[in-house]
Length: 166
Image (tube, rainbow, N blue to C red):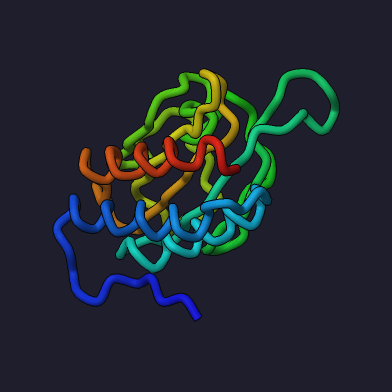
């Protein structure tokens, strides 16, 4: 049995160092993207306090043809929106811009998609492969301004690790 949950509260740098090591160990050599996303979503839930959603949206063809969109992937939390067009909401903004979105107040974010009314802040980091977005890592919290630049840097490092594993 794996037990990757940190035993004590850690400084952000150490927390993300341990999270990255755990994600690396769980995904090393495993070619199945869904399995890797599922395990990493569970790790995020275990490692990061004060979340109400942690998981992935992956890039896939639109249901009715046309441009790609984000489609719900493995996650931990309440049921979520299944499809998000690029440019819509925080996840769509991250996918369209290929840039991290650190949102201290989701209610002030133009076009925010409220999958869970309890969410107050959000961090979305695109996963890039060869410059193209293949997925986003999405973290939601019921606490305003929950996420910091240290969180953004830590999740960006995780996205870089996962870029060839999902």
